[in-house]
Image 1: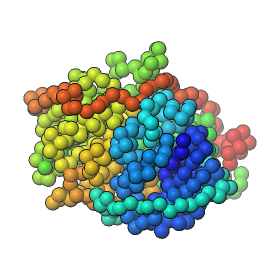
Image 2: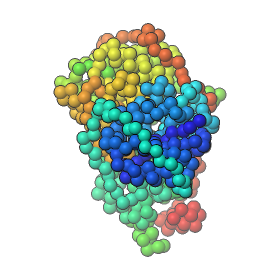
Image 3: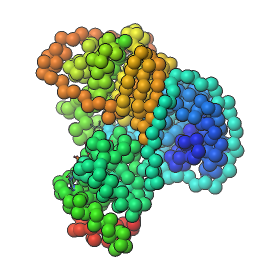
Image 4: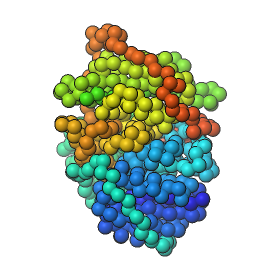
Length: 313
Length: 249
Ligand SMILES: Cc1cc2nc3c(=O)[nH]c(=O)nc-3n(C[C@H](O)[C@H](O)[C@H](O)COP(=O)(O)OP(=O)(O)OC[C@H]3O[C@@H](n4cnc5c(N)ncnc54)[C@H](O)[C@@H]3O)c2cc1C
C-alpha cells in the first residue's frame, strides 16, 4: 500500500498544507511518496524530501506544469496512479480543482476535505457547513482524497527522502493561464497562522478595515481574515474570506470583529482554540461560540486593544 | 451555443440543519428547500450570456426524484428556457451525477456547462470537475468573472492567494463562486411564465450509465458544540484573560 501526496507549492517553496497532508497520509500507511509537479521546482522537491514520513519525492519538472493547470496535473497523476492505494492532496484551490478530475478519469468516487481517518477505507468529512460529520467507507480500490489541513498536525522536517525525476507527460493544451494577481503580504498565511484578526461588515469601509485591523494584526503577528460580507463589500480581498466557501482556519486565537457569526462563517473558524468576539450587538450569534466576548463599539475597542498591546499592558 | 446548467435541490441556507432522532441522517421533513445558491448564480450567469447574445438557449438540468421539478421551475423563473429532470430515486453521489450529466450534455450538444462550485449540503465540490474530465473538456473552477466571445472563454477565478485568469476554447465547463454575480429575483410574471416552460423528464435508467453508490455512509453525527464563554467588561479584562487564563498572547 503506497500513498501519493500531491505537493502544494509555488515552484519556489513548499506550502504548509503539504506538511498536514503528509501527516494525514501517515495514518494510512508507511510508504509515502510526494509528487512535485511544476517548473524549475527543484527547491520544492528538496523541501519535500525533508518531511518526516516521506519515502520518496517524485519530481515532474516541465514548463507545462508551471501554471499548475488542473488538466495537466490530472493527466500526470492519472499516468502514475496505478502504483498507489491512495492519492491525497490538500483541499486547496488546486487540490479541489484537480482531484475530482483525477477520480473521474479513474472511475473512483473522490472524498472531499477529510478531517479524520478511521481506517484505510473509512474517513470522516464535514457536510452542511461543518454542522454534520459523516463517516464514509469507500468501495473503490484506489482512494482519491482531499485533506483539510487544519485537522492534521503538520509533520516535522527531519527526514531525508530520495528524489526521483519522473516523466512530466505532455501538455494537454486544454486551457492556459493568461494572468494572475496574487495578494502579496508580509503577514503569515491565513490557513496556517497562529493568530487571525478577522473583520466583518461592522467595519463599514475598506479604509476602516485597514486602519483598525492592520495595526492590531501587526501587534499580534496575525493574519487578516474577513467575512463574506466584508469581502463582497470590497473591504478585503477574496483570499481573506473565512467560512464554508472560503478558507478554513483553526488558529490558537481568532478575533472576530464586527462579524455576526452566520453559520457559514462559523464553519470556517469554529475549531479555533480561543475565539474572541467584539460586537456591539450582545445578541449576535458569534457570542455563542466565543470564549471571550466584548460587547462594545469596535471603533472604540479595537484602537484601545491595539494601544494596550503596543504599550505592553 | 447551448448552455447547460445543472441545479440541485438543497436545504435552504438559512435553515438550521438537524439530525433525525435515530441519527440516520439529516432531517428533511418539513424543512424549507431551495435551489443551491451557487447553482442560482450559475443560472444567472447563463441567462446573462444569453441576454448578451452569446448563447442561444439555457437548459437547466436536475437529477433526482419528482421534487427536483420545483428546483427546475426556480431556474426557469430566473430565465432558463427549458428544463430536464433526470429521474431516479437512487441515492445519487457526485460521480453518478457527473455521468448522468455527461449523457445529457452529449444528447443536447451543449458547448458550455456552468455549475455551482459546491452544493451547500454535501459540500463535496466535485461534480463540475468530474463532468469536465469525463467529457475531456477544460474547466475553470471558482469563477468570479466570465467573458465569452468567438468560442473563447476568459474566466477569472478565485484561488487561495488571489485571483487568476484562464483562457479556454469551448466546449468548456465553469464552476461559479459567490462573487460572480448577484442573481435577480424571480418576478411574479416570470414565476407564472416558468410554469408553462417545457420540462422534460428522462429516466436515469435510460441513459445507460452506472449510478450505483461507491461510498457507504456508516455514521452521521453532529460535531461537539462549542460552549459560549464569558463576556468581559472591557479591553483590559480581555487582555488579562488572553494572557493569564487562555495564555494565547
Ligand atoms: C451559499 C453561502 C455561502 C456563504 N459562505 C460564507 C463564507 O464562506 N464566509 C462568510 O463569512 N459568510 C458566508 N456566507 C454569508 C453569511 O451567511 C453571512 O451573510 C456573512 O457571514 C455575514 O457577514 P458579517 O458577519 O460580516 O455581516 P453581518 O451579518 O451584517 O454582521 C455585521 C456585524 O457587525 C456588528 N457591528 C456593526 N457595527 C459595529 C460596530 N460599530 N461595533 C461593533 N460591532 C458592529 C453587527 O452587530 C453585526 O453583528 C455565505 C452565505 C451563503 C448563502
